[in-house]
Length: 452
Ligand SMILES: Cc1ncc(COP(=O)(O)O)c(C=O)c1O
Image (tube, rainbow, N blue to C red; front, side, top):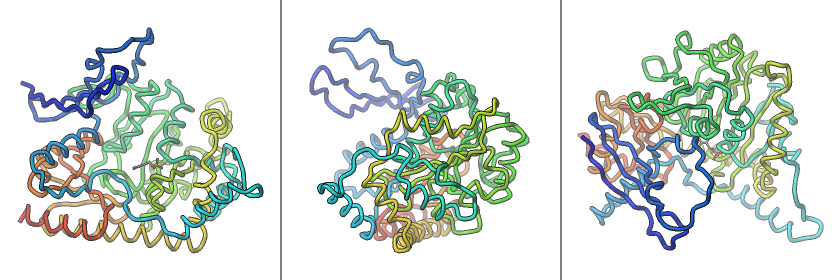
């Protein structure tokens, strides 16, 4: 019934270091999951008397990127001459504009001087940066600098928001969605067990977003939850929600008394009239927190800088302002973003910085267009790519892991199987537009030869 392959990522150099070991399990209908058998692998060393957090045990077994990496390693072992191109992980590839790195480098050097040295900064972020984010990224939207909390990135903010909300709230996500929402839900204890038949966690509301509903959930059939994670432009589908769709979402949250956690990590890629912020929708300030990032616009995936907006009007059921609790979380569980990164963030928002960032974003969008054209020329339906650096390609009737394997086998290109983003991603693959132009062009040539 099950075909089991084994991968061991690293040798066990000493008995204190557990051996990370995974098995790929394939079920009767071909769905492959990566089983973390690390628990079974730990046989040596002295054990503590501390029980493993059951929420951690409940985390997805099919950890997507290690399995992709394992498959890439397997492929490279089999074909040592293969020139593998990765269009998988959503990491930026182009250098940070030098106007920004120069500012960071000057700032770093000034830390070696008596006049320039500074230690801890404000936990909420440097005042000038909070103000610049409020004024330049939310013009006319009444966002105050005191509602902006600068951080080390939006993924970290998502976890801190989960800490803020606690284990008792109910949660909805788009299906497919960026895995951090569900994983952090499981870790904090909001989810029950994963249902093997559906690939869904009990207690989590999966709001299907597919081409048939224009990648926007059917809210008339969605259950009420306390919290709704919503990402636009979306990772992985690349869809940016329209104003009308967001009006529906805000109305739904207001009717149900829910909080939307709105992720705009890719807002800089929006080309059309889709809103860049949830606060463009009237009434959103009473129901939405917004998380965002410099990662995908400034190439700060390694520098680490993001922010979260918590409006003063957002209140708990007892009338207490959420912003006070979020401030407490930031002061307790975070201690302020790197001052060097914040100096860079401020430069990103200068006139010259914005111009430099736009040209990087345009570069990735041109890559996306090349990929979109490639898939369209092959007669495949490809979505996204216009307002996001991701192209979401449909292979009707096929398992996404099978498509992933076929593309890898025949073109040496790594993609991401859509089912890794939730059951709603089955039949799709995500193709990332991050990459040097010549790599994207080479990928396009190989893909065309595969399908023609
Ligand atoms: C939708 C979405 N949100 C957040 C993040 C994480 O961003 P950051 O680098 O700011 O942690 C990513 C990264 O890929 C993402 O795709």
